[in-house]
Length: 511
Image (cartoon, rainbow, N blue to C red; front, side):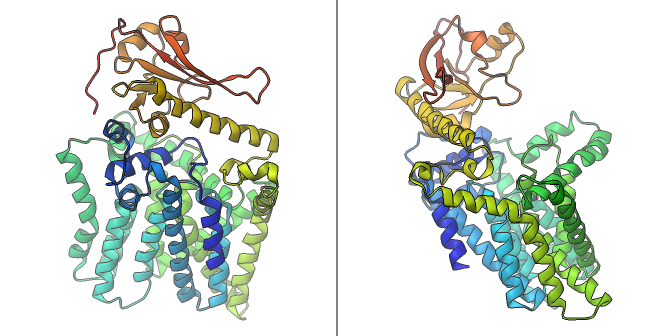
């Protein structure tokens, strides 16, 4: 376990965020907002609040520990600390359930090096903290005749998990159901304790007139989505997304064999979950609520299915191991540990091609010409190494381009961008999402906050490439152009265009 911790600390000790897109930048900006150590402009951190749809606990811990935008390596280290703590807790829980130290250790080691954990480790994201709090609650509720003090402690962990990730409400539902079916006298008080942090956070949001958040997004989607689309079409779409997330958790570039064996492993794990529900175990009840909420999550299918499923993977694996041992021992009553080892070996062999490629890339990164790529997620996830190298270099050039914005944009101005949180993180200037329009007149009617536009060379849905260059290039002044010098023709990576003050850009109060 110590070697695993050292490996992940070494791999992720970096002053960079090794992936473009996602919530990483937003988490760091909100950490700056909460931090007494931040020098980032208050205009920037307040603008970032508009894009912070997540609960506050993870960025709060980042900010209070100094793991902010100026010290990204500290943010990586704290995030990996949550992973290491979660792995240790998972090992303890697995050992208690399997009654075998070796079996529990191998299960924990397997989960620690599955592609899903490896790729998740590169991010500044809240999943590891959420997993730690979830496993803490699960372990406290795993045994019969639970002391009242453990119930109160579990309620506190559940409450903290909810203000780490909103899907933590599945823990509250499961906790209430678990207490009810076990006829716990103080179940109402315990449930109230578990929802107290969420209520407090809601009151704070109301007091500062902050309407953002996942519940706000869900409410807005529900206003335009029929019940039929939500309950039927969405379930079919998300079922496929969860299956994809499960398969890519084992092998990020799945083969036909992975699809078949991975699906069979998933079926065994789900059977184990059903068995745990039959036994009235909290972890089984929780998993049903967790997966059920993911099926009804009112968002389009995205590539984030592996990340959304991540917190359920270790629980599913233990359920599959326990069910395999329980079921097969009835058929052939020999040492049930043998069945557990067989289950783990099948998963390990299925994941071996992906894990083998990861460690092959690790070995290659020790070469002098590849050292600059070792701490980039793309180095391990891409197949064509030439394209991977170019992608990593382009991303680094983009970061330098964003940093140059502060040299040409005055401190009192803001910038429109298709990636506002990333522009803010590196430019120390407020940034807002570029208004989307299908005509020039409509665009100028909506784009009335900022005079500066950062034009990106990559696509962000629903924007086309280099949007909105065609609308503003004739009236604006190009003040910054960055190119990819390593490619033939030196294509543009990004450009900054300033619109004259004579164009009616009236500042609106957004801070």
